[in-house]
Amino acid sequence: MIEPKIDISQDETTVYIKCFGRLNFQYTNDFRTYVKSLNIGKVHDIIIDMKNCIGMDSTFMGVLSMLGLKAYKVKIPTTMHFVSDSNMFLLKGLGLTKIFKFSDEEYSIKSENSETLGLETDKMKNAETVIDAHETLMDIDSDNVQKFEGVVNYTKEDLKNMKEEEGR
Image 1 (cartoon, rainbow, N blue to C red):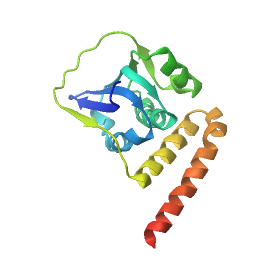
Image 2 (cartoon, helix red, strand yellow):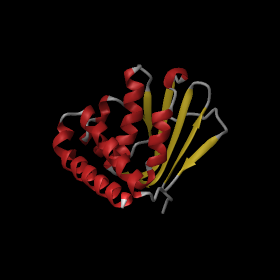
Image 3 (cartoon, rainbow, N blue to C red):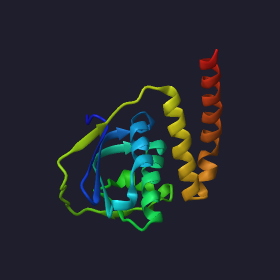
């Protein structure tokens, strides 16, 4: 079984992301932080390698969408390489083919520095990521509102309760 993780590297103009294993909300907090802090101004291309991604949940797809939407708004291509049929089914089902391009062509990484992002166990961080990711999915495709409105509301309530308990 492939260990879930996300490897990120970047050269002067390209961001390279390699996804491994079954990625879910527990593996997205550092990725979300990276996406939010990414200075997209110097980036000309984003490559996401999905060859070793055997599955993903809606939170992970939501964080991917944050990146894709950020790039899409400034006309930077975000290309997913080697997406399996099952992952493509998930992406299409959430309307994400609007913001990503897809390819089965090889590419070369020009950067030797990479950062590996892994498991996050902080429940409050996980809840914040779940909310942010699903709100992004709802922004991208109105059909997703019905799918994820309950998730967002429940998680917001759960996060509120966690914060109240922490304050005691």
